[in-house]
Image 1: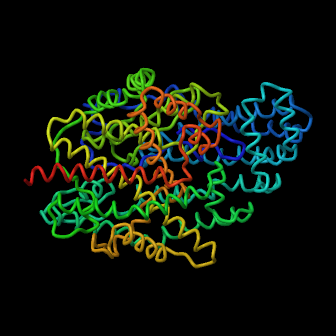
Image 2 (image 1 turned 45 degrees about the horizontal axis):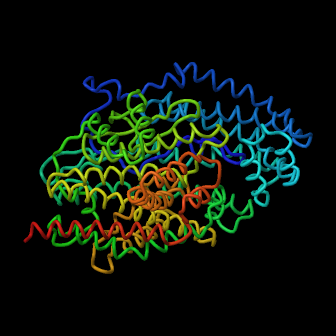
Image 3 (image 1 turned 90 degrees about the vertical axis):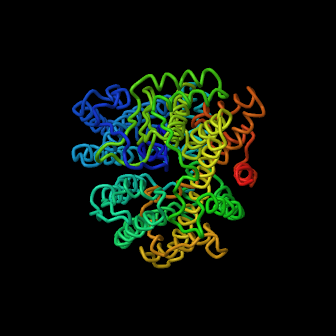
Length: 629
């Protein structure tokens, strides 16, 4: 998502919304001359060239000393406060553009050293900007609520800063002095360095082995090939790939344990410095999320494990397996050779979002008509998918499209983010447009549910219905249960460090193994978990954005709620949903959703999602019984 700035957040912290749906071996590649150039993004609206980007970066660096003149001026009155905020937010906006351009270019080729250097320079600059403005929150807090309210009343132009001003006041108990805030801001790039190390190690530097598959084929086991062959219909191939891949990752457990452990230590230290009871409380405080939301999610997911185990038993039945192992999770429940070129995928997604109204469809069609998407894989391209953007410019979408139905679903997902960005940017001023990560996955997963409903409604055969229902089950498993398992892993690791317990790659593997066994029903005889696969924790890049992944699970629960309401409630329910997207960052996300009728601190949304999953399983069993009979 487009990462707008509050008075307390670094600009790059929320620069993009990353999908967990990852690539398989390319069916096409962006560097294939047969690929239509319209599916290779054009970022010239951002900067015409790297030289222009460097000039913009230099301009920001030159502006930083000038921001110092505003320090100490807020007490002079509303006019002085307005001048300071407009100058600072102007730099924030420029930094957002610099950071977004650098990160998007770097993600298309991780081997491109100059691109990686630009990305690093952008992150360094973010730290410099944060350090240069670290005095701002303490100075606002020194004004106090009464004076801030008086300023807002006296100067109407301050209205767009009202939410951020009151937010700074809310965080006063957790804000340090200006000097200490400056030190922490300057250290932010170093504190976030673990993620960069992980990315380079896992995508560029690991010496991946070449293995001989049971069918005699020789394969270099890169991440892309792992994600291809883990879906192979031959069980022996899947096992060989899992054994080799996780053995290789396990060899880096000490290194990955160090990089992730340093990230966790940084979280714990900063939470203590800021007088929070825990690292999770500190993380949630940024968007005023009650800790009960996080812990209710984990509790309800655990209560819903019988439904997840029911799905695994259905998977075993559909794959006709004598038992179930962890390497049996990824093969599709229904094999399909159907091809969905990206042009066809766009048409399907446009048709599927019809319940969201003409304005939504028109905005989406406009996005498809421009070169705003890097669609296909290519050599060195980062795995996964994301959307990002800059206020005043267009969003951009990063995919690794495979011409299959899963890719259509990912297309719907990422363009849901893009529409959220578009509607928030249309409706709110820059200072209020940047929606939080807590809201970010609602529009994306709502698009996926709408696509699933559309495809089911238009399916012509039982096999088609099973294909789309199976895809939805996998979406719920991966986005709700798997992400909550990750969230529980983060809780356990942080809780252990906060208690002073030693933490290492070995200990992380033990924690993760326990969660794998619980979530996959090992003790109930549902699935067997080989301990070597517990190295998977080291594979998850999202752990370097602590307490981030839980928002996938809360969001898919919210989107299930909204799509049900839209289906049953018509235009009024649709408008309520779109109003939540248009709200951007004008209020805390829990409040935005509460205004739309949804309380995320209650069990209701999570229970509703589990009920939906049960209903899908029941329908699939019915269709299978028809065939069996």
